[in-house]
Image (tube, rainbow, N blue to C red):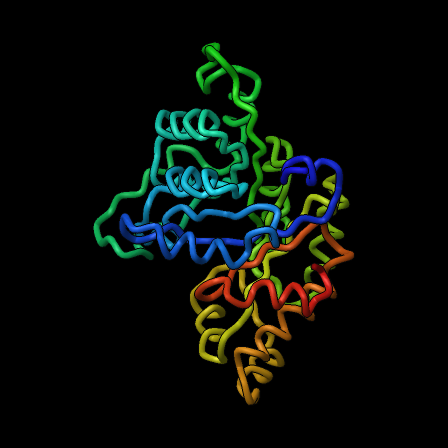
Length: 290
């Protein structure tokens, strides 16, 4: 059963994130993917994450697809206008890449290319609406396509439950987001409140995928708190990392504990490692999920 079928049927999904190479050599990407082969349902491929230039996720997904991996292609609004977005989506579908995670994308000022200009011709809500049109057999201007797409689109969300955040999330759902992937969770209580709010607006909790970042050190925890929007690591977790004899093991134990707590609240988890996936399988085993 593929990723989209599992989402539709309510079966628990496990996904994991990989960044494409910053170059043309795909050996390390494939090595990282090999750690999680047969362990996850799909591999997410980032799109110039944090506005740092890397290989096209379309190409990376295609290469991984040829090796037998099901992929979820990230697509940001930052780098493309509506023409380029549609071309990218048609190309992805033609290559058998049918899972798309839509996001606005970090501003280029945060990345590694000073002076790069953002596009933002569309926002993430509009992009989801565009995908709905392509799936119905029409382009964004209403022209009929020669063949329609069959894309399973998802959206991202922070665990904010203020009025503005919920209005935007509701728009994403209305525009066809079939699954919601959250920013990294470090507080099961906050996550529970977020899930309750989404359930109240009519979105099934089985379609919510909780983000998990296994910490490696106190320093990495403080870096995430300071630099990544939507991440709030509580001080008690930072203290555990600070006092741990082996911070890497402590980070794995914290991640596994969170997965155990979240498992019954949502429809899946998404592992975003700091570094590679060498420990991902062990974390999932510690959590009793595989």
